[in-house]
Each structure stands twice: as structure tokens, then as C-alpha cells.
Length: 420
Ligand SMILES: Nc1ncnc2c1ncn2[C@@H]1O[C@H](COP(=O)(O)OP(=O)(O)OP(=O)(O)O)[C@@H](O)[C@H]1O
Ligand SMILES: [Mg+2]
Image (cartoon, rainbow, N blue to C red; front, top):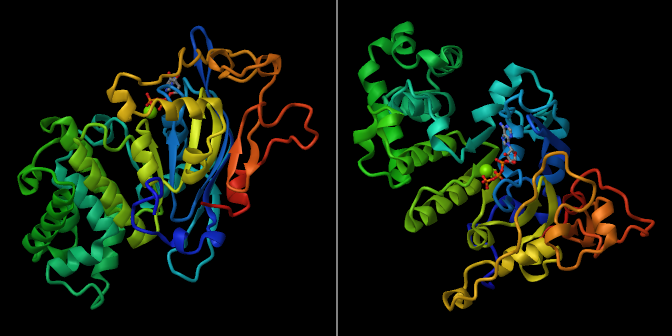
């Protein structure tokens, strides 16, 4: 294995690369905001696939649209100020039992009930800002207890000495839990007579599972924080509560938006390991958003590089790190701290990300690019293949007079089933 190959545990996608299907297909996604000074084109024509069981890294400088893209998956972009979103985000989710056919929905147009089911049940997100993601009115015990009750009810019942298969108590509990979400746990327990008698055992079982999940994130004194509210925790602790919550759901898709920014390096390594274990257990697809290219290089199967609201380049981790094509990607890679940077030779990309307010046509990187030509300042390049598992949006590889040049409707790499 070379230093650049993924080091997390292999997933089903690794075992069966040619059959890895897209769980999520983002197609020409456009999220624009109405600002006082004009329209901010935060995400403008983003297209990529997230394959089953893979980890896809989404990288790029601050403000380039990574979080807005991710939040669009779950209908969490506030509108207004966002203008109506365009494009599609097709989600192919698994049925409840192994024999049911996958169902495809467009996350941009599902109704609220369907989205409520998808959020948390099927797609979980670790937010960049943990402070906003936790419910301030619920203790840690209650926020995570609900997750265990709904997603891991069999374990809860077994822990309380109840045989989940012996009667329909488990399913009754589940139905109640879904219905009474915000009133968990007191009212729920008391509303079902057979559980009333077992209240102490059930609470102990849930507390045990929640404390174990928190302990896995290496949070100090997990049992001691069960009764605390989010505002009583530090940023790093809140981030770990959110991670425990997201992992406990066994989601089909995990969106991890800078999941370890508030954590020190050893805890970060452990969290990455936990995400890898979730993938092995549940074949979860992970969208891993990060500024940290060294980390992305270690954990991701494929990488999408975003610049100023668009995908500059997408491909296998091997292609992106060994054969980067886009001048922006090359600049990012040159800026990775290395031995040379310790000697004060850190390369940085000159200039800054442009204002995205009513941008002129043309490649958005042109002003910072050492290879820009007249063509780059006047027309938009499109994402097109340069290798079986690699596509780039740059006139340097696809000049405008190329008759074959057409905008792909899906990530061309994923469509070909090509992976590293
Ligand atoms: N609610 C909003 N209203 C107006 N503009 C917004 C809103 N949310 C995001 N934006 C704008 O969208 C652009 C992309 O923001 P986004 O948060 O997706 O960047 P990012 O790539 O996640 O950056 P970072 O790496 O710093 O997290 C920015 O210009 C930002 O100012
Ligand atoms: Mg962000």
C-alpha cells in the first residue's frame, strides 16, 4: 500500500467496485442567495455522485459552497434568503427489508413528512457548528435516548430484560416514539402500561447505551454528562455528542461537515476510525467535508474539489493526489504543510476566492490562475473526463473548440462505475 491509498477499513464498495451504485446523484445543483448587493451564486451547477459505501471528500477554500451543498441534501438552506433551488439531488434509499426495491426521491422536492423521515433515519449530518445542531432544551440523555429508542430499540429492550421478539411491545414503543418525538422519555414510558413497571430498567438500559456511545467518542466522564444541557458543554464535547448521535442512527448516508475541527489530533484519529467502523457495519456512504487535505488523503476513496460554487475537479484519491489536473487543485496540494513548509517554504495560492455576487461569465479561478487565456475569462468551462476515473473543469484540458464538449448530466466517473 502506498502512503496515498485509503487507510480506513475496506467497505463493500471496495470489494465490488464495478457495481458500486450512486446512493446520491447531485445534478446541476444551484443555490443562490438574494443579498442586498445582488445575487450570491454560492452553489452554481454542482454535479457529482456519492457511491454506495464510499467516502467522498469535498474540499475547497472557505466560502466555496461546501456546507451549502451539504445542507441542501437535508433541506436545511434557509429560504429566504436562498432563492428557489435548481437542479436535483436524487437519493436512492434502501427499503425496510432486504428484498424491497430501492426507492429514488429528489431531496429538493420531497414533502416535509418524507424529509423528516430521511433526516436522521437515512441521512445523518455532523454539522460544522455543533452549537446549533443540538436541541438546547433537551438534556444529552434525552437527545441521544430518543435516537436509541427509534434506531436501536432491540438493544434497548434487551438491556432492560425484555425479549424484543416475544411480543409486539417493541413495535408499539417504536410507533409511539416516532409519534411523540419531542415528549420523550417520561410521557412515552408512562403511556404504555407494560413499560411502566419496567421504567427503571429501561432508563438504565438507555442510559447505558448512550453512555457507551459517548464513551466511544472519548468524551471525558460520559455518564456524568447525561443530565447536562448543551450549553453546559464545551465546543469539543458538543461536537462529540453530535458525532455519537449521528453514528447511533446507522444511516445510509453520513454527511460529515468538518467533523473534527474542534477536536485534538488523537481524538480526530479515533473519530475517523469510528466512521470507518460505521461504514463496515452498515455500508454507509460518507460525504466528508474538510479543509484538511492530509486527512482527506487518508480517509477518502474519491475527492471532489470545489471552487467558488463549482466542482473544479473530481476523481479517485489516487488520481487527484498523483495526477491533479486543475490549477486550483495543484495549488491546494502545493499548500499542504510538509517537510518543506517546516523550512518556511509553504506554497499558497495567490489571491482570494472571488465575490460570488452576480459573477461575470468565465472560469471563476481565472484571476488566480497562471495558465489563464482569453477563453477562460469569457466562457464557463464544464466538467469533462480526462481519465476513466477523473474529470476536470478547465479549458486547459477541454478547449472550447472540442466538438465533443457537453455538460455531463451526472458525475461521469460514477456513471462509468470507475473508481480507484
Ligand atoms: N444563509 C445564507 N445567506 C446568505 N449567504 C449565505 C448563506 N449561507 C451561506 N452563504 C454564502 O454562501 C457561500 C458559501 O458558503 P458555505 O458555508 O457553503 O462555504 P464553505 O465552503 O462551507 O466554507 P467553510 O469552509 O468556511 O465552511 C458563502 O459566500 C456564504 O457567504
Ligand atoms: Mg462550511
